[in-house]
Image 1: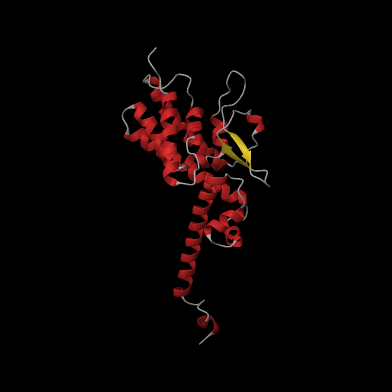
Image 2: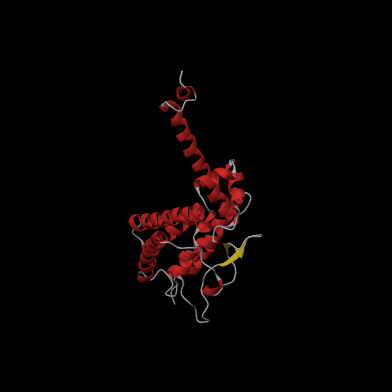
Length: 239
């Protein structure tokens, strides 16, 4: 028997399981990254992702040569998911307010708001009368210069450093802003959305209405209650 045959490298039955294992590891890493970044923000270290995925940190770096590559992958996927959810609400709900509220409830329930890339919020931001941008403040992860979104006081756009943004990031953000803009315009035109509510405000609701709590049932209940309150604040009322 040749050395090639003996070590299994010369037949397809040996290489196929390796490919399956590699795909499984990739899925574990991506799932772990969504969980860790959703809980701790994009400032969480790669070691935390590897630990959650139950793989070595070297395995993570083999698939994603830098943390920025992994962050961009997760952010792009979540932006795309939000865009799909907005399109579904737009296409399946006849009533403008129902479409907007469905999008918000679906997005918050999925937890995608915790993974919104900061540039999406910055692109959509409108300055208020004080010249401050209505975006969530970002918190620095201990031992890191990277940031995470937290629902606190407004901060100026200049104080929120942006990660590297490529053409694909811009395209994904633009698609999301366009379809959410349609939801907002429809609800506003129907007189069901406050006239001063912007696309930025809607994305801000998604980013802040999904608190991270240790108990899943408590988190779901808290998210639902908080979103109910926020929706009431967005809705137009008769004079």
